[in-house]
Image (cartoon, rainbow, N blue to C red; front, side, top):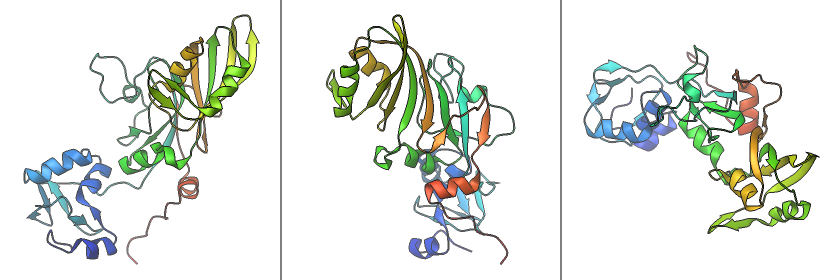
Length: 258
């Protein structure tokens, strides 16, 4: 068994991971809060207090928080969720508005979102039990495209939409290349398809407003290789583990006992 004083490299070579990450994956708290628990002397590894957040946990180790054993983290899981409009993408809202996590079906593990959709946006929201995976999927350098269907009110200028491919600066904020095209128009209402990679806060709404267009509906239909498809509103569906490994290059889980 590993001891708190074990060499980190040796522990890592045996398949261990830093205790803060391990606790976060186990759903105890965030990594930052786990580091606070270490500093407060509230975490033990194999019966000995943990003094360093760089301590590694191996497959056979026993971790305790405040004297209670913590179950080993679940395997990494990813879910597709069809978020309805009118829900916040946070665990708690200071204004008391309903959240995505208030409305999830029972029986799911503790989940966090991959990025966010604002209150009035809807569509595909990825959820995971692994904070490290969430951060990885949010990185713009992954080159994953977020694709939206957007209903707007106003006069659509096809040339202005095409110019978004060069990026645009709005009130000092630089937005990267955006692909935007007109799908259909009826009177002063139109449906657009918009694709981007950065996903800055309220990016689609701000860019459309810059073009004199008011967004009346915004639906995310794809996040990288994952599609909304025909998933019913409010539903949650787990991504097949094999598909997850193929798309993200994750290693297959190791079997225990030989």
